Length: 233
Image 1 (cartoon, rainbow, N blue to C red):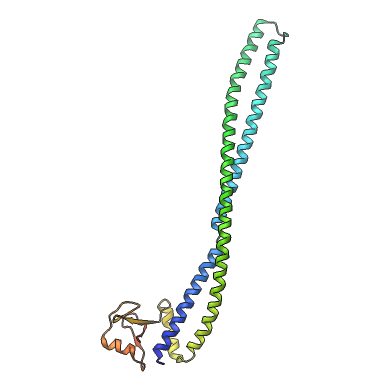
Image 2 (cartoon, rainbow, N blue to C red; image 1 turned 90 degrees about the horizontal axis):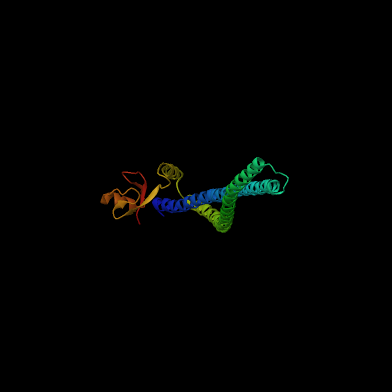
C-alpha cells in the first residue's frame, strides 16, 4: 500500500471523527441551552403578574363601587328619612346625592374597565401557559432524540478511534507527524484527492507531472498552492 493511500484512509477516518465531534458539541450546547423554555417561563411569570395586578385593581374597583353605594344609601336615608327638615340642608343633601350618584357612574365605568382588563390578562395567562407546555413537550421530544443521537455518535467515535489506530500503525512516524501538522494548519484536511486535474481542496490546476506524482506509490506529492498531500487513484 502506498504512503499516500495510507494517509488518505487516515484522513477519511479523521474527517468522520471531526464531523462526529462537531455534532456532539452542537448537541451538548442544544441540551444545555434552555433559552426557549426559559423565555416561555418568563412569559408565564409576566402574565401571572399582570393577571394578579388586574385582579387587585378589579377588587379595589369593586370595593370603591360598594363604598360609594353605601354613601348614597346613607345620604338618601338622611334626605328621605324625615330627620332633616331645613330646606337648605335638604337642598345640600339633594346636591350630595346627585354628586355621589354621578361619581358612582364613574366608578362603575372603572370597574367595567378593570373587569375587562382582568379578562384579557386571564386570557393572556392561559395562552402563555399553553405555549410553555408546548415548548416543554417539544423540548422533551427533542431531548430524547438528541440523547439517542449522542449515544450513537459516541459509539461511532469509539469504533473510529480503533480504526484510526489500525490505519496509523503502518504510517512512517515522520510522515505521520507531517500529516498531523498539516491537519492543524489546514483546518483538519491534510490529504485531498485530485479531481479533474486539480487539487480538490483549493482548486489549483495541477500539471500532468504533478498528477502523475500524486498517483505514484513511491513518493508523496503536495499541492503547490495549499501544500496538502495529494492522492489520486
